[in-house]
Length: 275
Image (tube, rainbow, N blue to C red; front, side, top):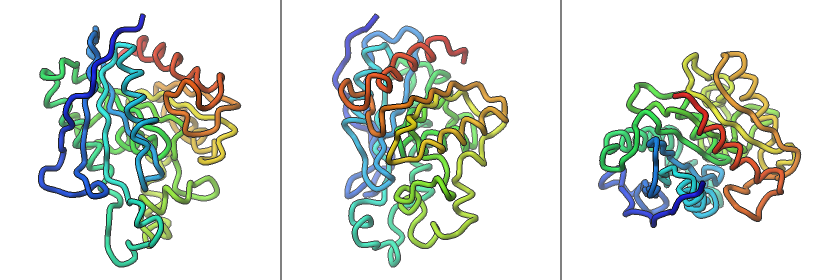
C-alpha cells in the first residue's frame, strides 16, 4: 500500500565551511516518509561517473519513490571530480576531488543520520544505502570499508554499479575520476578500490541489480560482485535482467518493462529482510 510523500527538508551541510562539491558544499537532503512503520531509511547516492551527479533521476525521483513505499530517504550530493576535470585534466597539476573524498562523504552521511535518528524518526539500525552506477560503487564501498558501527550501513543496494577498477571490465571514466590521472595507472590503487576483492566477512546484506545489455558499465561488474558475495556467504539478492540498459533509476519510462520491475523486487526484499 502506497503512502503519501512530503517535500524535501532543508539540506544539511556535512562539512561546514568547506567548498567541495563543484563549487558547493557536500549536502544531505532529507525526504521523510509520512508513514514509516518500521523506521527504515536509505541514503541515496546518485551516479554520474564520479564526475557529476544525476541528482534528479537517480536522486530526488528515487527518494520520492521510496517515500511512496513508507521509507524515508536522504539524497547525498557527494564530492565528484567535476566537469572541468573531465574536459581539461586539471588534476595533473592540482589534486581536485578524488578518493578518499567520496568515501569520507558517504561515511559522514551515515554517521550524521544515525546521530539524528530521533529527530528524523527513523531506526538507526535500519539505515541502509542505495546507489546507481558510480553511486553504486560508492554505496557498496560503504558496505565494504566501514570502520565502526557508526558508519556501517544496515544493508546496501548497488543498482547497475561500477564494481571493479581492473581490466577488462573497468569503467574507465569512473576509474579516472575516482583515482585521478596518475593514480588510475597504478595497479595497487586499482586493486584497493576493486570491490570484488574487498567484501568483508561481516558485510551487510546486499540487493544487486543490473542488465546484460548495459552499454555503459559492463554487466560483468555485477557478476563479479555476486560471485564475491557468494564466496563469502553474504546474504544477498542478485537480479540480472536481459534488457534495460543503464541509467533508468526509479523512472517509470526509462529502461524497459523488465528492468523497471527492480523497484517491486527491492520493496519485497526490504520488507522481508531480517536486520
